[in-house]
Length: 418
Image 1 (cartoon, one colour):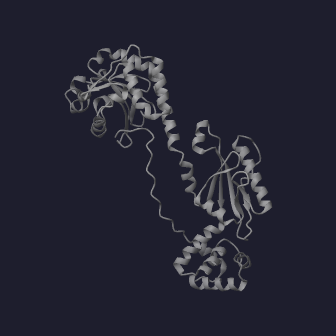
Image 2: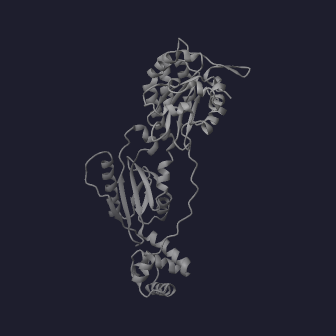
C-alpha cells in the first residue's frame, strides 16, 4: 500500500498521482521540517516526502543496511511497504547499494553514473523493486554514523524517468540540504536514545545485588532498588526520612551526622567543586549486627540538560553493603545442604559475618549457652571442629543464583519497516 496520501499526494482509484517539485516550495520550510523530524522521529516519513518534492524526486528512504543484515532498518517516504520488506529481505546487495558503499559522507551520488544502468534494468531487482515504484535513478547521501564498519546507510531519493532529466539539479538541491539532514539525523538518534532510556537507571540499580539507590542534587532518594527497600523496612541502622523529602538517615546520631556530611561533600564534587570527600563509611546498627558499609559515588552532571530526562537529575549513587546479608545467604545454602534448623542457620549466618558468641547471643536475644548448643550442632552436621573452620566453610560456600527474569523486549526508537 502506498503512503502517498500521508504525504499530501492524491490516490485515485488505487493509482497514486505523485506531485512533482513545486516552484513555490520554500527552502526554509523544508529545513524547518527536517529539524522538527529530528526531535519527533514519527515525522520522518512525511519529511522525506517534503524533501523529495523540494528536490524533484518521487520519494525516498532513510536506510541502514547492516553487514550481516541484523539491525537493518528503513524509514520510508512515499514508498510501498510491501516492497520495502521485500527489499530488506532479498535485495540489499543490489548494484546501487554496492556502488554507494564507495561514496563518502557529505557527498551526493547519482546512481546511474556509477553502475551499468541498462544491465540493472534487465534484473530481478529492477523488476521487483524499481519498476513498480517508477524508480529510474537514485540519489544517495551517506550518513557517517550509518556508513561505517561494513554497513551502508543514509538518505536515498528516487527519480522517475521524467525526473531523471533533471538529476544534476536534484543532486544540487539535495546538496544544499545535506548539512541539515546530517545534523538532524544525528539529533534524531540522540533524542531516540533519550526516549528509550527512562527505565535504564532503574534497570541498572536493580542489577545490583546489594542495596543501592540514586540521589538527586538535593540529596533526595530518587530510585532505590528492591534490596534498598528491604533494608529500609528492617529499620536497623539506616532508614528513609520523609520529613521534607525522602532522604537517607541513620538511627545512631553520630552515624547520621557522618552520613549527612558525606552526602553533602559528594554533591559538591558532583557539581564540580574540589573538596575533601569521605566516600566510604560504616554505619552502626542498633541490633548489634555488623555495621553497614556505605559507598557514595558522585555522578558527573549531564553534558546536555535534556539528559535529565534520562537520569532524573541523579547526582549520587549510594551502595550499601550488609556483611551479614551475604553470610546469611551462604548459611541458607548450608541449611539446604546439611539440614540445619532455622535457629542453627541464624547462628551460622552471624558466625559467618564475623561475630563472636557473646555478640551473637546479644543480637539474637538468646542466652550464650543456647548459642553454644546451636554452634555445636552446626559443627556436628557439617563435620568441622572449630568456629574458625566453620566461618571458613560459610565464606567458601557459593550462593545459588536466582533464575534470571526474562529481559523486556527492546523498544523500537525509530520507526522501522522490516
